[in-house]
Image 1 (cartoon, rainbow, N blue to C red):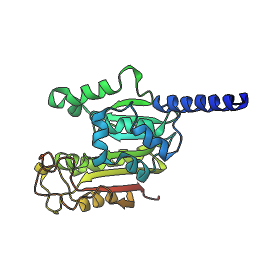
Image 2 (cartoon, rainbow, N blue to C red; image 1 turned 90 degrees about the vertical axis):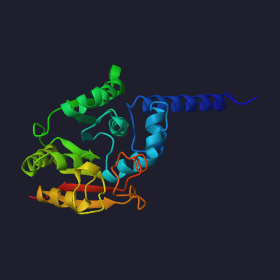
Image 3 (cartoon, helix red, strand yellow; image 1 turned 120 degrees about the vertical axis):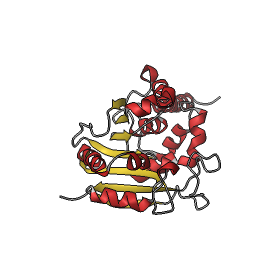
Image 4 (cartoon, rainbow, N blue to C red; image 1 turned 30 degrees about the horizontal axis):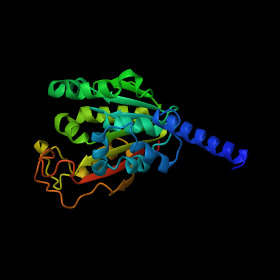
Length: 258
């Protein structure tokens, strides 16, 4: 027969373990623990479809590289259906905030597919720290309140469809939204060629680097964990042979010192 002290200790540990699990699954008390965050990404909270996309997107490495931590405020540009919105929600926890941006084009495209996905993902206050920031480009009204801005797999379209003068105004608004020590994290699909072809939905990394530096950002660092030397740059990114496996560059920008 085991002593009562052993029984009490065992049950106390069980309670603590359950409490940790519940708080993590509810995205209300995430701590800066990478092993715990890894478990959160694999938990039943997330759909199997999202988890299947992780191999190609490496969300935990993205969070680490951009320096996204619990308690931060993150502005996510063009959240679409919300894959990264959910990841960000778990990452910043109950003391953080995610401003998930979408414009009307994204919400209405493909018979409203992305808008429906986002609504379903955030229904019933499921991601309580997420606010849907519905604004057109050029209409952002944030000032000195965001720790990190993320621009993931969509700057190529802005580059292709929007005149440079307007792009510079948009980047100025993103810079203004950031706190003095804020970060802008960007991921996009490599074109391989300096010649820009909008139909491929790719962009050469140097075009992005030059444009952000011109807009008053400093390239702090870049990463290669999403690179794929086997990518066929001649193919559009939605081609089944390359979709989800494109060569991607990862940049971390900061505000230029005044």
